[in-house]
Image (cartoon, rainbow, N blue to C red; front, side, top):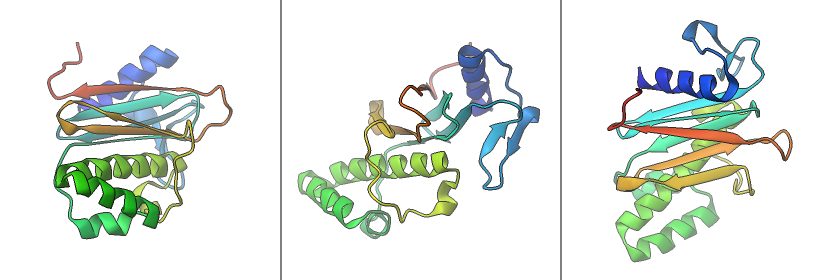
Length: 171
């Protein structure tokens, strides 16, 4: 699987350890970790590619999503009132602008929930999560959006993000 290869590359490049699925465990919330290894990682994939993030910070999350039309009622359920108003302002430009803004919001929230260790089971009823350094979003070609969240243990923690699109190989 591409995501396993990408995670393996992350851990080998950054932390000089060999990743294998046999070493992977899950905590009581279902968040994966590697037994005996005090660093975090997260993986996400969609039809457009795979994103993996690794960090000294254990509380890390990533999400990648490709462009698509999202129904307004779905957006409304996920967004806070302030976020919904921002989405409506984006819609004044075009439906595509609103969809892109929502996918950025969605990936930010999902990455944040993964970093918290709850994933989607934690629900999207979150406060505004846009604290500097906590969630970073990247717009890629063809409307693909990637967000990574790190609930920093201290200000010196960093994360490294690798993205493998469907045209790349693992050579």
